[in-house]
Amino acid sequence: VTVHYVSQEVNLTDEQRLKTPVECVVEADLERTLLLDELKGLDQKAAAGELDAKGSQRHGDVLSRLEEIDANSAERRAKDLLDNLGFSSSLQARPLKELSGGWRVRTMLAAAIFAKPDLLLLDEPTNHLSILAVMWLARELSTSETWKQRIVVIVSHDRYFMDEV
Image 1 (cartoon, helix red, strand yellow):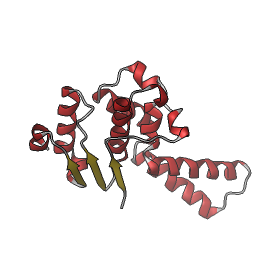
Image 2: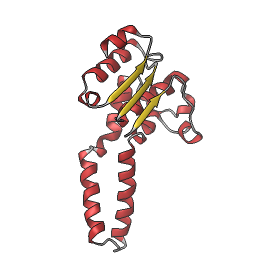
Image 3: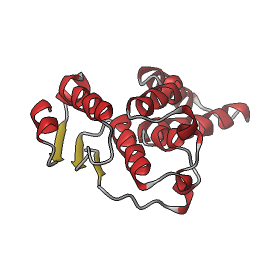
């Protein structure tokens, strides 16, 4: 079971502070990240001639799974998600350390949605969002097939948002 919690306040690691919102969102897909790391190791073994039949089978399985989850389009999907939450292209390209707390929270919200956890916990998710972003988030959570199959727990004082979701 995967769980993602988005709080009202964001505490970033030193490593996260140097990353762009797009990088943070893409890295939130842990399955993709782990598969790409595994693929790199398998490719290295293959190049050295050290890949046995079992390794070769695993290599094919990893490639198939990466295709199933549309791993190659991750950056484009992350940019689209950030765009829906109000990020301009220039904001998407800046390191998180240069963004305000509100933009950092939006980044973490985008990362949580991108990761598609089994359980999504949102604490006042509309606090730092524009009206358009609130409307997009409500539509995403209430109509997307992804969230119909998962559990979403929301704490919010925004009655409109809660009624929509």
